[in-house]
Length: 233
Image 1 (tube, rainbow, N blue to C red):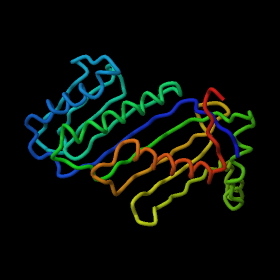
Image 2 (cartoon, rainbow, N blue to C red; image 1 turned 45 degrees about the vertical axis):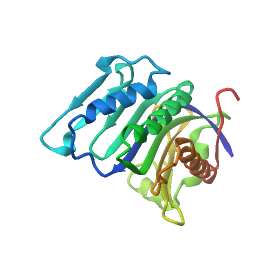
Image 3 (spheres, rainbow, N blue to C red; image 1 turned 180 degrees about the vertical axis):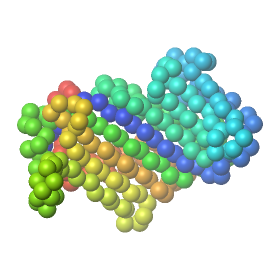
Image 4 (cartoon, rainbow, N blue to C red; image 1 turned 90 degrees about the horizontal axis):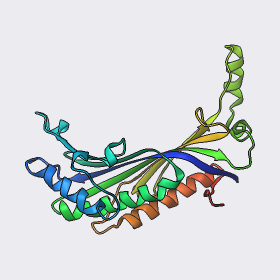
């Protein structure tokens, strides 16, 4: 196993629900109250961090909360709750997950007339190679001779990458996993995991959902012969 350590990552969560929010009057206020109640114990919330847009098309209507006025957001649309934490440091990862969990748990309370259908978590991560060996050494195992031959013929260089997909036996989840050399962080790999839980129970907690997602993520890491280690190790 090649040990890697996160340099930075981005987390994107999309939770779809039904039925859609056809009647939008008062929805933004319910969403704002949900966010305030879920996050106030942990962070300071400023009223100017809330915004809403009411267009003529239901697909364009949204309510939004920006964490500290920055790029991390929570967005509610007619059929989806989205949470985005782009470019977070390893020290911020646990806090991001805790906030996601609090928002996820609060939605069924404030919107008890709606039910989660599926949840998707996408993680983009630049991970340092802990041993210090160059990424090309690890990525060579994914090199394809036919592609290398063609690359030479056209004056190019074959840069290997790997991607595979998994689907649960019962069709209750699916995952797409990818690794390639990082273009932005020296001596690092770029990982992209896209995992969706497609069948959710009414009382499924965020911890149970995240536990399932984490097991799938770890299986993907093992399939890629990678082991993630924390900064304290």
